[in-house]
Structure formats: structure tokens, C-alpha cells
Image (cartoon, rainbow, N blue to C red; front, side, top):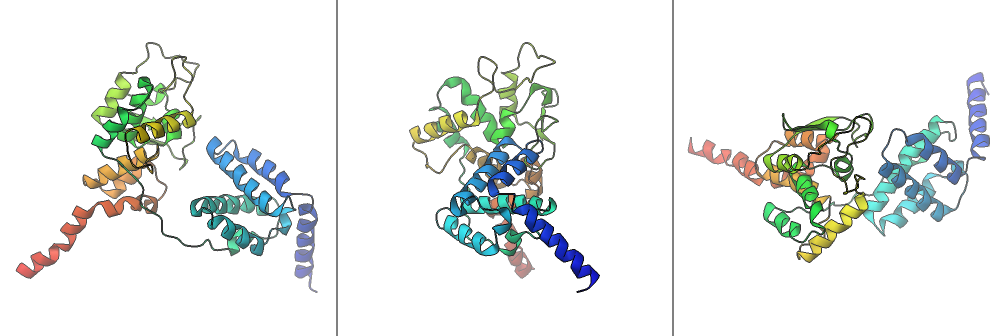
Length: 309
């Protein structure tokens, strides 16, 4: 055995010994604590749920004992129940095990050896302005109606809407800033969004008489100035959707899809839409590309123009 292989063997042995003392639960707690300062509360909770599902499946074994065979069984088991949940668990745990590798708990990341099954993703549900008005008519209590109107005309994620503060609103320029030192967006990038007239009117009607310098002046709050919870707004919207007799697949996030879908159908370039939505990659925005059928028709009609000439 040469000197290099001896060192490698010692390092692997060290990893194995240390990992025996790091159970899945212990690592989950350590990893969750490490991401709380850089990721959203929603993401952290999602990671913890992913770990809990894995622990339920294999028990609280040492992290070193998680191999590609266990992962494949776990993913197939979850995939057969819910493709989307399985995909979420896969992404979250693969990222977590990358950190375990960095911390020296494992010699390699077994999740990188497992390919997630491919599946056809359905097109996102969206509504038009007339359908929005029908839903808004059913929203109770009345003072939260403009929240859904604002979401429809800005495409904000629910977390972005709840964390929007008056300090990040510029009514003179008719723009808002999404993301700051206190709120990290999903893409971890601050973006500026121009407001259409209807979104502008929502904000102009809510301008507070006093903006406190040392408080978080959230735009959308209850009468007691405390912010709404995402769960409350989601459930109220879903209740209104059902009362209006709409497709049950429509939910709060459909307002974001609706913003994107309606702009695409009005001819807005997909790269502009990417910036408005705050997507990290154009590939994410391309789920809406099937809606720009008029642009595609114009493209293929160029064959006819060539034939005529």
C-alpha cells in the first residue's frame, strides 16, 4: 500500500467513525440550524419534513448507512404516492447530504448516484381577469380582497407578498422592491417590479398615515398591524374558489401562474417575464411558453411568405 492510499484509507475510516455518532435526527437538527439564517422558514420546514419522511422509512440510523439502494427504495415508495412530494424530498435531501459530505460525515454523496424518475408535469392552472372577479366576489372578509387582486397583477409569491414593506414601495415611480436584508427571496436576488394601474391602486388605497422608522411596516396586515399568515390567506382564497364554482386545482399560487400566463398571451417576451417573476433560470419560465401560440403561428407562417415570393 503506498503513502497516498494509506492517507485515503485513514480519512475514510475517520469519516466512518464520526458518522456512527451522527444519526439522521442529529444531522437533521444540525443542518436545519445551519440554514435558518440563509433560507426561508418555509424552506427550512420543507427540509425537516423531508428528513422526517426518510427517518420514518428507514428509522433513525447513522447517516453513513444511507446508500443508493436505500435511496432508490425510498424515492420509488414516495414517487408512487406523490411524484411532486418525492421530487421535493429528493432535492432537499440531496442538498443536505452535500453539506454532510462537506462536514466530513460521509465520504461521498449517495444521492448523486440516484437519478430521479422522469415524469410529465401538468401545465399550471391559471385564471383570467373575469374569473378573478368572480372569485373576489366570494372572498370573505372583504378587507382581504385587494391582497388577491395585488397578487394577480404582480405575480408575487405568497412569501414575497407577506414580507412586502412600505420602505420598499415607491408610489411616485410606481415600482416595488422585492427582497431586502430582512427577507431573502427564493432566488436570493433582489428585484424591482413596475406596477400596473390596478396594482398601484391597491397600494395607494392602503398607504398608512404613519410609517414607523423602527418597525417592520408590512403592507398587508390585519387591523392590529400584525401580518397575515400564509395559511390563512391560502385557505380563504381556496374557499372563495370553491364558492365561485371554479376548478378545484386553482389555488393561491395560481395567481402567480395567472400573472405569467396572461402576460405571455399578451405577447410579453419570456425573458422579461423571467425578470418579473424572479426566476433563477429561463428554463423555469419556459413552462409558460406553450401559451404564446400566436407567436408560434407567426413563426411558421413565414413558410407561406417564402412560398409566395
